[in-house]
Length: 369
Image (cartoon, rainbow, N blue to C red; front, side):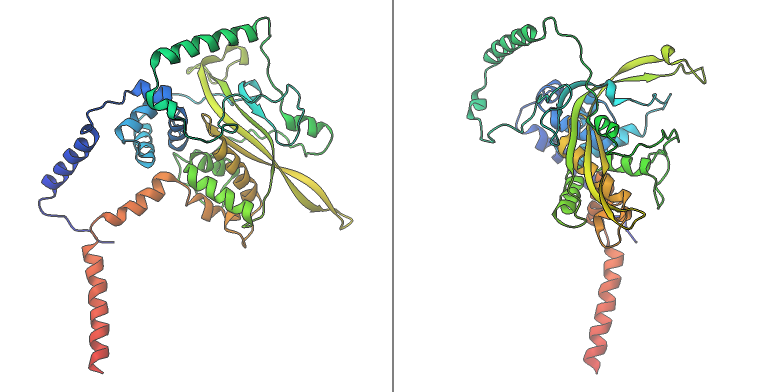
């Protein structure tokens, strides 16, 4: 593909950058990073997920710099991520240790530990709240104080509770297959380009980094019939999990000697997918497979869609695009897709003129006949 330089390009580019800054400043308002962090949590979570970097402050900075453009903010944060040194790898996270803020199951009404609705838009009326137009800080502070007092009253004398996994109870009944623990180190797709066929660790990395809208759309396509995967949500859990690392100068550490370096907020989904399996007697029996989704922050729709696509890609099927790992994994990446689409704005003078010359020659030859 040929490109040519544009004369006077430096001046034009500098003028374009000035105009970009003007468009950001002409309203004479400044959005503080702390304001984005405090009021745009889902946006911050989405950018962190697609950039695969858990850094709320940097995510908010990227959103501010990008003027609210999601793909640009993800591009900025991924570019910054690529400059960071990697000092160590964390230990494998066990999500049963999650400090749960929200936990629901669509499969069972009564689950061990109970349903915990937490913070969600699921039960709102989806009507515009015009009270927000004239929101007052003093009123907000008064509401916060009253709410926090109620919260303190609710948790008095209550013990810290960790919630078991719903699927564990079904495994005990023999309804879900048990698999041996696989300690094979996952491939890091940020260091090695993916090659097909991929392993599940690679697929899950691409899916959790995928553009939220693209992952959701393909998950929806599968539900509508392009693969016909219709799961029941076994469990959605949102909360913080602790991150531990080994001592950097010790090859192996005792589990009790690991270093705690902080928490990350995650959304985890396990979907139950019914499948008909032929047994040795050639009779079909109904069994269940698990689709898995996980994402930084509270990003439930994406994690659910990811769990659908995980199960699709575990069962490749040439007839359906949602079961084709090449089709799915190569088209959901935010930076890859927006970058390639945006490259069409770059000069293609040479290639297009070549095509025009070819078309003219064909027209000319036809007219001569």
